[in-house]
Image 1 (cartoon, rainbow, N blue to C red):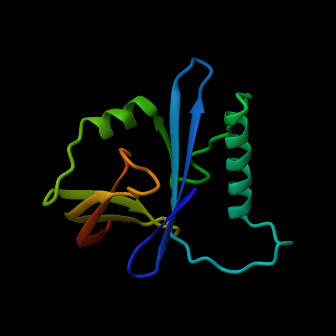
Image 2: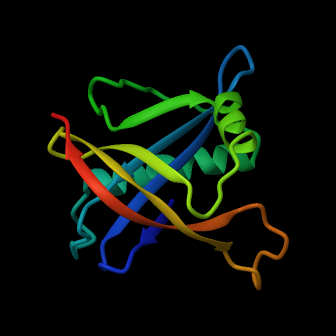
Image 3: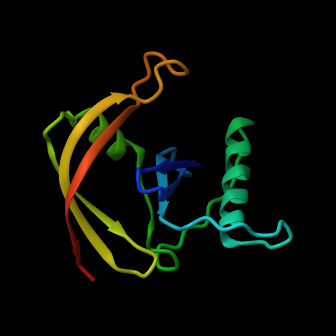
Length: 151
């Protein structure tokens, strides 16, 4: 799980999960949630803490080479999606990102509306050259110019 914070002090939480299927296909699951973080007593079991617990259990199973089961129902939570890792790798490895490049991005909100953001990439830099030298991960800065609500 990682938190991406922007200048506006809003956090976009992203959960990532790698899954091996029965026929040895590797899938990538990602969920974005744009929610304000609230302080909750530790006795309250929220859906977020349940998601984190499930991801922790899956990460432990992956680290110990143990099997685990993922139940995925796209109709119950449409903002989650699972795609084949090969499709993700193809998109990442065969797409050259450069300053000045225009982009379009669909984003589904908690209210079930879908927004289309359009903008321009304004900068690309190393994510953290001190902790992760020679990493392939990059920090991409962008200027969002247009937001259209589709639903």
